[in-house]
Image (cartoon, rainbow, N blue to C red):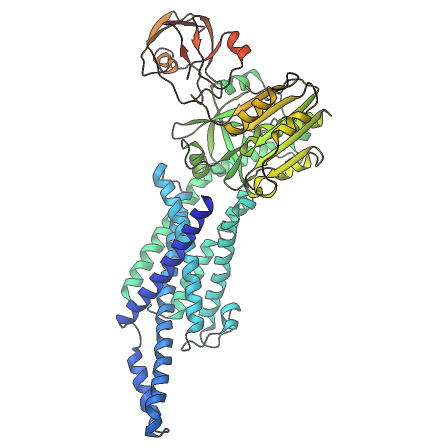
Length: 588
């Protein structure tokens, strides 16, 4: 599906560019903005009568007429495609500045992002059309040397040089944009800033080339576009100062010359205040964003004042309170010993609930974001041996676990499965754990793993940890169930949508309230009317943030997180579960 979408997207850009260039080239020629090809033909034909016999005049004139028409047609296409390229580059710069200054939000931001990328790609197409038509136009007398080497054309070398340099900058911006998944975000951003000198060189080339620059419409268009770009650039510089100052404070506080994970004594231990902040929410600074793989973006979070963050154990997650009001949980995948920062990785899911798209679209280095946690509902239990099975973005939870077991010298194996290598995050870190222990299996190269063989080969007493798509988890559970000497521990990507059912009464023992839960509302939603601060998270029965103890009554468990032992001990996730009877008593 992704390949078909990419082909359709590239095809639409190419067809749009070609059709528009040819159509607009004809229009520009038809409006008579330049020399008329008919006048050139008459001049050529009249000159031939002085040297050729009348019998050959007609045939030679016809040949020259065709050549002149072809040359003028390419000239019109070159002019039109050049002007369109300049306009598209300006529109792309405006779109990038709109995204950088955060003047667009929500759906408007996603629409602006898509349009910015499409216009940028279309500018590349029109540049190719412009270069091809310039090369094909005999009137301009431009060859490969003039197209590739700046300042080599005898006539108007400055204009030609600006055009060639602009072409190279455009190639650099386009290449780094298409390969941004392979670059750290900071380096991609710095290379992407080449769009500004690129647009400046394109303006200089357009003006110095002299084509159609006397037209008033171009003067007004240039003035408006220049004013918009200047305003947005100034706004960007002003808004980035506060974020940059905050980032500088955090960087100065943590810049000791030695990685924090290697020098924990330089940082204070987490205090009770820090632990309390973890429960009520912390404002952390996004210090770095990095493309780890296709559609996988990692965030490195720091305390703005450089203080130590609450400690965590492998399997823990934090919850981001996004500006839209969404709250999403992401596994911590950094080093447990690093008390100065948290690292999470987010897979963009366009057809999901919107949280991952919002992070990918809006998150930028230097911003502050509210974070809750860390919490751990997927702990690493003591075991003589471990088998870690990660599917796709599930590697985020497995990575910290495998790292800790490997550092402790334990017995372990990791199988990392993905669709293709380019979509699998943290490959280098996984391979660095040990090629004899960590197995990377891109499905397009090696096919799907034989789960039955993996489980059968596990030593007695092995704890099998699995995080990935539902189908993989179900398959692992089924195979582990055939061996009573193994235990399975899993974490889901998605859970159950809030379920409704028969109305019931819920007594809140500590609060002393008795509330009625209607059939069309969840227990959590009804409790929030009385206790707004009740803990909640994913509201899908996955994260465990709303876990509550049942004191009386029989719950109807509909979550996908709690084990049978936890349910027997009285645990209940009130975001999705209800009651088998008419009444429940909760420890709230």
